[in-house]
Amino acid sequence: QVQLVESGGGLVQAGGSLRLSCAASGRTFSGYAMGWFRQAPGKTREFVAAITWSGSMTVYADSVKGRFTISRDNAKNTRFLQMNSVKPEDTAVYYCAAGAIFGPLLRRENDYEYWGQGTQVTVSS
Image 1 (cartoon, rainbow, N blue to C red):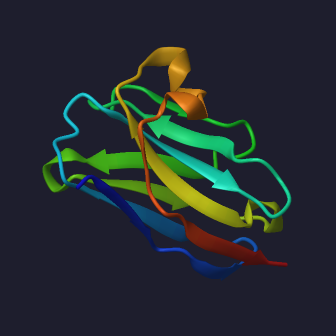
Image 2: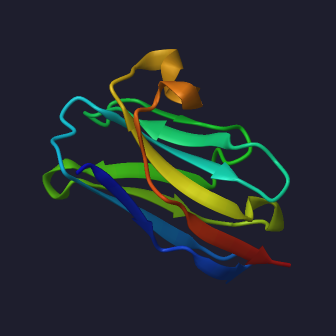
């Protein structure tokens, strides 16, 4: 059974930091890109960041560029989203996803095959 399990969410003050993790199991994700998406209350899910299998390419939403960093440890089948200088508008449920995709498809939610259950991030002002 393929599973992506997020962890590391919680309550943080504006300006603080959080590190989200996404542990993958159930199959090999060799060649798979990994992405992070988020959904705030009353809003549709949106792209946050993505990284290719090799780590040679990363992409970010403009809203998080310069504040968030995506990384991966393929040996441990784990991906990370380091969130710095968080803002109240970063409050959302954060989801990790995996897909055999490249380039411009990295931002497209519908092209990811596997999804985690999400972890809540709440930023207080």
